[in-house]
Image (cartoon, rainbow over all chains, first blue to last red; front, side, top):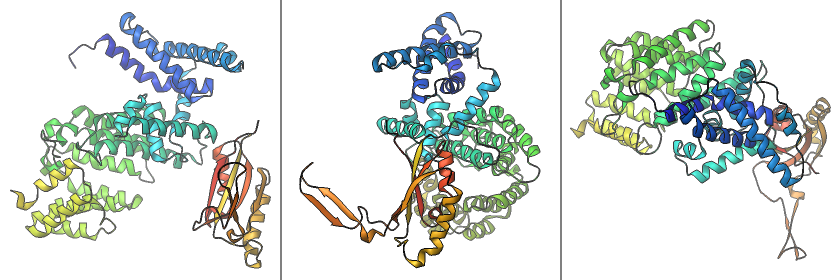
Length: 411
Length: 115
């Protein structure tokens, strides 16, 4: 980047990177999500008013936490005078201890992560809450990112927070024995968010950038919080490597460009470098049982490291798929393997492998893969039928244009 | 401590029938094991014994009754427990030990505290 960042941008960036931590601290101190959110919002507004003028303070987090705490006290006082009940919380906040040390902030934040992704909340609610509280997006931005009307999103968030409060979903880092399962839930929520952005299921565009950015940001946050968890490292690596192809993945006309035809010069070398490095780190941490995210990231790394499509090490890709299938024998993973077979052994072997994957008759990409391979084999009628089937199963518009463009009869 | 109701949905069985003796013993075992958090509860007679009551035209209006449960569902409301737990995690963990959890479903709902 050569362009100097404006004071406004610098202030905004500083606020964004501290938001989740400050909110997590305020939730612990006040014990009230809504109050904490309002107080942090007050502090953020004040920062965005004063920082561009006075410069970002040396300790932006301390500044924001102190101001947010004061705003919380003001709000409690206003509320207490209305309802006539003097809140103990004011005393607590007034006498609050010095700035929490890093490890306390880390625990606050971890608690918030596990609460936002609590398995008793619907997946939609988990994603919305994570974007709102961990990502610091406004309700309107969350609604836009998820293509939901703002009123619907406001209701969804209110309902989720109501459940946390009334049903007493605990703010707690799960105990060791339940941690793996709970962490799994957190990771799949973040990856779902990423995929929602990466292969948007509905609408015109193939990708929704802001959602991808938020998912990667959350991945980084989790990696900061849990640097020793291989699956966390693997997920961040996987997202970085997939996202490194963002600019090459969609043509100017909005059509999706398949991996084979992508201009690799457009891949983001910094994301590739970081992703590959993380794959290595994650692999060193998973000696006994392979982790699905780490293995998928390793597959993505095989592609990232090939100078061009022809140079892809398909043997390596296939062996990683074999490893993946030992821990995650899903039809989608088998389809991925079948596609790799097609590249290494030709379309005929590939089609046999694709057809051997059962359970995907309702999955648009299974039909799209068949269409592609039937086309390569010159079986035109079948290819046309398969691509029509893929489109009818709700491939999004940009992907559909890609599939129909590649119909053998459309030249 | 917050209270939760664990609402039990199972096949529409008659718990008083000798056929259910084995099931009832399982519930008895759960009741003993979870005695520390159970604050109340009941097994209900089958939905065939239920009466749904409505008052037409507002308070004080005609009492209308229909034979049967409010909602006809594949699995019926056949009992409940009142649980006192620290939080939803504990309530869910307790509900997961109620036999209905693997032989139907258990709905966990927080109880509004009465002032």
